[in-house]
Image (cartoon, rainbow, N blue to C red):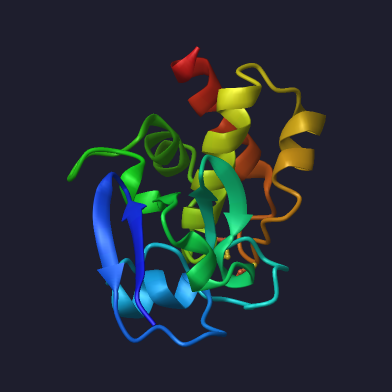
Length: 154
Ligand code: FES
Ligand code: FES
C-alpha cells in the first residue's frame, strides 16, 4: 500500500508498505531517515521516539498505515539542516553522548518534556525519560544535559 504523510514539514509518500509494517521501518527503510534507531522493536527502549501529530510515540509500535494523512516529526526535523537544536547541543556539551545509539530518542523525549515543563525537577526528568534506555552513560550526564538545555531554552 501507499502511505502519504507530512514528515518534518514535507509531504512524503512511501510506496510498497505492507500491512504490518511499523512507522519506524517506513521512516528508516523507505524514507531514508535513519535518525530514529531500531534497538528493541518492542516499545521498551525509546530509541525510535518520534512525534506523531505532536504526541511522543515509539515509532516501532505505530503501524506505518496509521501515519496516513498525519504529521510526523523525527529527530532530523527538530533543528534546521546542519544546525543543532539546543537540546542536541546540550547533550554534546554535557558529555551525554557515548555510543550515541539512545541519543536521538533521548533528544526527542527531552524536547517533549521541556515544551511541557520548562523547569523540570530531577524527579520529573527521570520520570519523563523513564522509557528511554541508555546502556552507556549511567544517566547522570543525560540529566545534566536536560538541565543545561532547560536553562538555555527558558
Ligand atoms: S525500538 Fe522502539 S522502543 Fe525500542
Ligand atoms: S550512549 Fe550508548 S546507549 Fe546511550
